[in-house]
Image: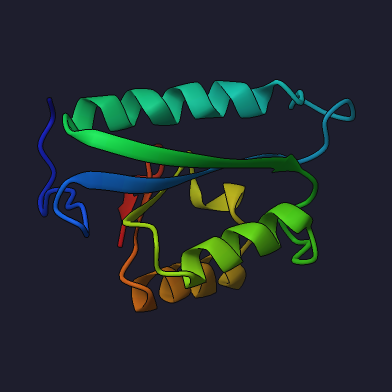
Length: 127
């Protein structure tokens, strides 16, 4: 297991509650395919397995559409989930899977306010 500094911590002391977010821009119209969401989830789970050896509960929110669209149901669901305060960690492949530009930063600030850590496994980003 690879250690993090600071290490992952389960809020309840027992089970790490993880929200995984996957998104492809435009399936069928470019380089990304809709099944790329499943590929992202596999990579995120592999990362989690290498950094946490305890019990874990995960929820996956996957969708497609432009990261510039903040009215996507998946984005609104993810934002609501983070605001709920029930997650210890948001895992994503990179920040652009949440949204674009400033809106990713605002999402991360919302997560921090709720006591939730955000890690982008490919972007070496960790709040």
